[in-house]
Image (cartoon, rainbow, N blue to C red):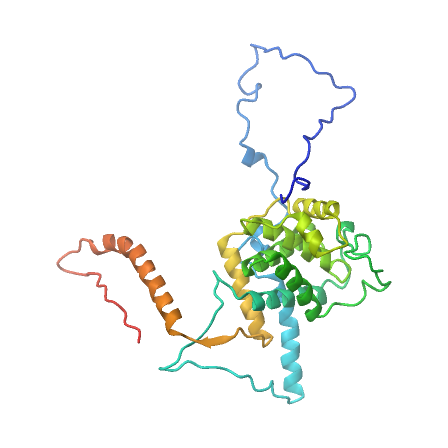
Length: 341
């Protein structure tokens, strides 16, 4: 994926045989029954091992499971509210805009077209809570993500690089630099967060100060190739991060895919869940999306979209009208247009 030197281009795997095994020519035995010949083998789906991961509790696979970043952020949000209540400090006046009969305020972020700047801010905040509220006992740290073993720059890594948590602004600048240079979309940022949490769940690792940059880089690399039709090649990331090699990028991509068990599918329901949970995270941390008054041009666009949806589902509503009913209990479906002023 990406270029001719990508990790996904490899030679055919070599067969490993026992040293004492011998290949013999096939000689059919007419005395064997159907069961002995293996004609009644189980279907491949029945023979597959059930994954240890329960999909019901994996947020990156199941739309009903709660996202990890939102649950980790709730602890800090409750502590902030408790501190403000104990110290009798008001949360501060937040400039809110309210719609009226003459003016309607809307933000320019939707689930299909999120706001790029604020989506990246929310993703950076989610990664920040992942690092801050990670498992205190510590979990396995893979070498491929260790910044000391695979530095992203030629500058010397400080001895305490794994001790201090990065600030949200530092994470935001790192993600924004990659998205700006590679010209990635806001949807790619949401898919990046899905892959990040899927990696933490599948590989049973934590994101920490020692590995957060390479984990985020691997998630962005994979999300850009899955989401965008014209994906950024691995060699292009080497132009953004001057001191990283193509071989390192290929190896990072290969191991990231293996840890994901090559599960790069993101259902629309999971994508929508992450989008709305990011909005909830922004609201809980006073990171509101910018509101703008509804302009005449945008109102016409919304009206055109509504007409398209009405024409699309008009044919589906017609069969529901033709319903037989008894004279004793006559019920008819009435359709009346809604007028919004």
